[in-house]
Amino acid sequence: MRCGRRDEEGKGGARGQPAPPKAAAVLVTGSKLFQFCEASEQAESKEEQHLCGKHVGLFRMDFSPAGSSDLSEAEEAEIETIKQHREELLEDIKKLKEQIAQVFAEIECFQNEERQETDHNPGEQTSKLSQRDKLLSLGRKKFNMDPAKGIQYLIEQQLLSSDLQEIAKFLHKGEGLNKTAIGDYLGGRDPTNIQILQAFVACHQFANLNLVQALRQFLWSFRLPGEAQKIDRMMEAFANWYCKCNPGVFQSTDTCYILSFSIIMLNTSLHNPNVKDKPPFERFVSINRGIDNGADLPEELLKNLFESIKNEPFSIPEDDGNDLTHTFFNPSREGWLLKLGGRVKTWKRRWFILTDNCLYYFEYTTDKEPLGIIPLENLSVRKVDDPKKPNCFELFNPNCKGQKIKACKTDGDGKVVEGKHQSYKISAATPAERDEWIEAIRTSITQDPFYDLVSARKKKIANKN
Image (tube, rainbow, N blue to C red; front, side, top):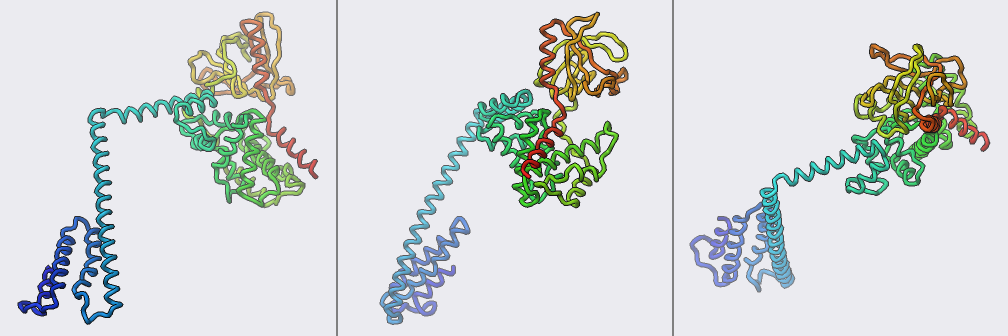
């Protein structure tokens, strides 16, 4: 052993020769060094060997006996300082070893307790996770039926924090959530809903995106509600956040707001098969003249936005499931009514559901697909008399008399075809039920909100200038 050999050499200048008289201190120190090297070689880890090895040099200092004439007073003082430092380091190493041993003992104790719990209750941990997943799934279903109640339930079950930022992140992630329900909740006028909307919009990264790219990302995370005031709040929040992420692109958020609506309407005009008159680029430019605080936007910018929408329409998010069941979770009204046929004038009993600005009718309450869909946009409702049926009301288009109402139904072969009604005559069981249906339908009927919202914002800009 290297340390043993040094010890032997310390006893005499060469092996077998007697030690010099002044080497007594060296014998003692050499013995200490031998023991220390033994400990180093028996260390359990490389880290311990490294620490021990660092101090071998300090022990070698003891080979020069105190008071040796070869050392100056300053050198002897330095040696004493090093010895003291060595002792302190050894003490620190000892304490560190004790602390490490204590930590390992605590870890071992914890693992033993965990093993014992698993042995006694092997399915408990799995059961807890399973129960949490069930509650989370139930909470999502409640949200899809009634967003406010769903959020409240998730918070009460401690599955979701009441912090508005966390709620916004939960909605932005959107796992298992109905996109229409998300849009309905975010569009609420309650101050809490508005704060959550702003936090939700801030979850999107719009920096360095053009307006069409940002709208694609934004409109994919939920479905725009049908109510004009909700759309206004949501697009206002979008415009504010986009301008904050891209300063200098537009002179005001009003410009971004109006142009966003123009792009959405352009998307509909270009890609809706019912729109025969496809708008050219020149019309898009004309619609957006003077919207940038009275100035025109660069034609190159408008051209890029136009071409982007023309080449690729907005993708509308589809909710979970392959049928329309999700639409009818929380209808405004539902019930049995009699409907007069369009071509064949016979009365048939149908199950009606009023929701999302549309009137759906089914043959049975258990059907997943409706027989027909009547969009209520731009329609009116009124009481009418019929010689064969009491308690009637009628859906009609006040601006296009004699024209077919834009609606669809399923024919005998299961194909979706255009409806043949110029008006829809419907009979309720009682006068009270008729009046309730009329009131509910009037509440749901809306004009196309986009044009009104854009018009109001353009007037605002004009008044500024």
